[in-house]
Amino acid sequence: MPAPVRTAALVVLAVLVTTVLSGAQPGTGREIPTAPRPAPAAAAGPPVVDGFRSPRTYTAVAPPVRLRIPALHVTSSLERLGVLADGTVAVPASPDIAGWYAGGPRPGQAGPAVILGHVDSQAGPGIFFNLFRLKRGTAVLVDRADGSTVTFRVSSVSRVSKTRFPRDLVYVPTLQPTLRLVTCGGSFDHARRSYRDNVIVYAA
Amino acid sequence: MPGHKHHSRLVPILCLGVIAVLPAGCTARHPAAAAPPAAASHAEHQAAAATATVPTSAPDRALRLQALLGQHSILAANFMRGRIRGDDDFAQAADAALSKNTADMRQLIGELFGSAAANQFQPKWQEHVVELFEFAKGVADQDKEAQAEARNELIKYEQDLAAFFVGASHGRLTTAAANTAMRMHVDHLLMQADTYAAKDYAKSDQLYRESYDHTYDLGATISAALLPPKQAAELRTPMWRLRSALGKLLAEHVVVVEDATRAAVTNAPDFAAAGQLVNANTRDLAAAMDTLFGAAAAKDFQSLWANHVDALVTYAGATAAHDSARQDQARADLSTFEARMATFLEGATGKRLTVSTLADALKAHDQALLKHADAYAAKDYTSAHDIAYQTYEHMSELAGALANAFGSTVAARLPAGAPQTGIGGMADVVEHR
Image 1: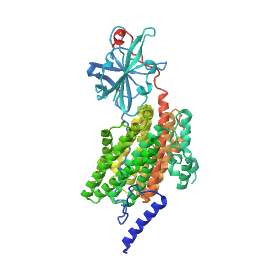
Image 2: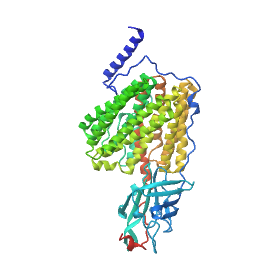
Image 3: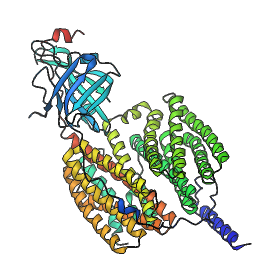
Image 4: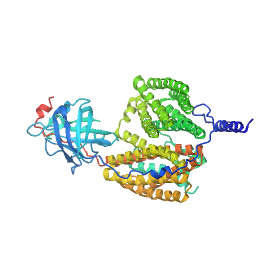
């Protein structure tokens, strides 16, 4: 038996013995011919790693400045909203202007961006008066401070009791870029001066 | 090995730290998680295996199915690439790792969906792997007929596997959706092989990443379709989705660093593309930190993470150049990173995770990646694959602990109650529509 053939046979035998002893099945169930081709050695030339550099500059998605919902003829600048002393989210000061919850993601970055708007005022409709009319697939556009625009499509619309507001679904960050539009709906509790429900639009 | 006993307790300790603040906590799911790979001998891993617990909840098992499927896509691609390079010793070791992955997946499917499902799944999956090998062999040998035959066989097994998942889902998964998912998985792997053989490494690595991403997510699709509806609903909760997404990104960090390491220690021409994958993963991790903790935290995180990645790549390059001084410098840089990142994460999570446990876990991670580079440079491919396998699982466990701590930190600052976005002036109209 020529030396190269003998060597190859021994290698194959060693692999088979090792496989049997270890009790492992080959992943493919088939023998992979080993040798006579040697594993590639380190290539000559300048080190390939010399040109490598990790990214050091972090570019954040710009904050939102304007909301547009063409299907509802809605265009609004966006007020920055935080959290009130009682822990609830602040709402826009004007019924005609929507607001972005700045404690959460910016629209277009990974996670759920939340925009709130009033359904009405004392005297008439608010910026989100017709939000409940949005249908699956409707476009919602958000313009950002750097001049860019991100477009979302409505995936669902729900109306939920304020006592069962789905805080996790609205605010908890997953890593998919999504948008939530929130307003009020349902019947009005005159004693509490509050609507009993919220209307939530989920868009991605 | 000095310090091993300490390291072997790191992840359980980390989990305990999380359990202390979260009822859900985390559960050690694999021996590798109980004993970080860099610090453990084979015998020590065997001992750990005897005492390790397994996931008991369906959502945890669904996360593990995702991780195993993502790992399958990486191992299959590596195996095909080894065969195309003519690096048969490497391909042999990759084949063994793929075998372990298939066995682990079979066991998990048995736990999730029953032994009958596992018994049906395993041979179909195995045949699918065989044909991937046959295709790579055809590419390596420039045998178009063999490639076409393997492709035809793969289409058949795609359909078999899709039919299996559809049947097991009791109608919750459509045939069209299952066929599309399986077709995409196979197409990714074949195209990355074709482009790798053509030396279009940028395209090949793009497909490598897409393949991992798609196959990882396939685990959620399968679990959601095959689990009973009540358990499947848990996979739609934001917290589960956060754990899934973070697990995918952090485990991807392991596989793309290892991919770059293999190219670096052989000074291979595909390094530039592999480096781009590493950087894409780094950017995505920083973006995730932005979502969780804001842009300033993301900037700090990315700077620290860049030090980490640069040190790992430097070590691999120094290993190729037999430059022990640069290797030592890389080790020192990693030690600095471990301490600083642990401090950063302790602050970000409001001390839900502590510096000491985080630093130990990060050290175990770094040491494992250095040992992987050493083993690959020494052409000890069996050890390199063993280490890679364990490092991947260790990172999946660590990602679960991090996601739990991140999630509870973020949850603590979310607005309470429901927004008051109405004054009532149009109540008569609003309540009657």
